[in-house]
Amino acid sequence: MINPPRTTASSPSDPTVAFGDAPGALPLLGHLPYLAARPLAFLDSLPAHGDVVRVRMGTRTLHVVHEPALVRRILTDRHDFDRGGVLYDKIRAVLGNGLATCPHAEHRRQRRALQPAFRQALMARYATTMAAETEALTARWRPGDTVDLTRETFRLTTAVAVRTLFSAGISDRAAEHLRTALEVLLPGVYTRVVAPVVDHVPSPARRRYRRALAVWRTGVADIVAAYRATGTDHEDALSLLLAARDADGRPLTDADLCDQVATLVLAGAETTSSTIAWALRLLADDPDASARLHAEVDAVLDGRTADHTDLATLPFTTDVVREVLRLYPPAWSVTRTAVRDTTLAGRPLPAGSTVMCCLYLVHRRADLFHDPARFAPDRWTTGLVPRDAYVPFGLGATRCIGDVFGMTEAVLALATLAARWHLTPVSTRPPRPAPRIVLSPGPLPMRLAPRRHGSAPPS
Image (cartoon, rainbow, N blue to C red; front, side, top):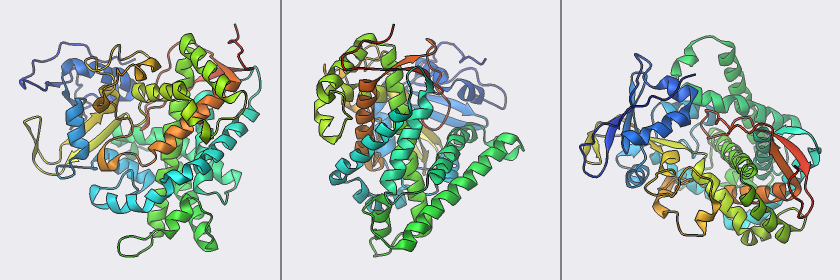
């Protein structure tokens, strides 16, 4: 097993921002083995070496930034920084050139086309779908069974994403093909970011990845073509996209539509599923927080499924989700490429340099958060969360367009699942996060026990 190197930090020369180099780079490989084997453990070792730490990814240098003011500048400065580099190249291979991956020059046009699908007036309708799919999930569960919670929550949020995008419906088989393709593609993208050579080495894993990519692209294209052929307004997200026009009155092309659908399915599935899974696992290890959550959902829901009208009366459940997003932000790192010679905290940064804003580390800075590694939902009611250091959905013009959608889904699903089931980890060992583009907890085997109103956890 590869462990992160441990050495003392180099002395910073900047009086306000500490710069340093990650130690332990291996010949030719740099720090890639650490990022591939234990990415979070490696990242946790970086703050000892500065606010901006240079990391070697093979022959490339990555500037890892976790100082809040610098992160804000990088993510909002559209003149000096843009989406580019190997990470976006690999993600575009899956998602195309959609809202989550397009360069700044195209972002405003694309966001305007998508914005109507996320207006507040539609959230109650989307919440009805969220509730129905949560009911369907729990109907499949049986007392005494063991389930992989990560896989189960991914099934839930994929179903929600598909039904809110395509309310006219797609076959169960088509939905399953999309879901299984994503399960291969998501870890595969991360592997290709840290080790691009895998795309050039014949292997069963490469063949599985390429088959999954073909299934994904074909499946999304078929859905778009079917909608366009009917010409019916189903009053769902895809219908809104079909009706969208750019500033010159032109509709989105089929390629544009496929890229946006891919973006919305991923954003609506993987990010929220990991948040729900993390929440239930952390609650299982914290009896006090779990008891408070159960008391709240018992009082508010009284056994029924949570719906949109309950959001305002689930403050502790909401704080649990916020705390999970602090500890394990799905978009744990956001990269930008310097498009021209610039500076970073007063130091020269040549054009073409890659900068990684590590939101995972920003949220865990000991100088900004008390006991930062501890799961503490109460910190949200005590004013102990510095606003500028909490950025789970990004910043500026590229802030996640589905932030309200994701929060709504996570809160409602968590409330309903916690109200009806006790979930006990099969292993007491802490989860080992899976290396993928979203910060997934990896497999989470949990035993199911039905929960009655006010019932205590099984002994």
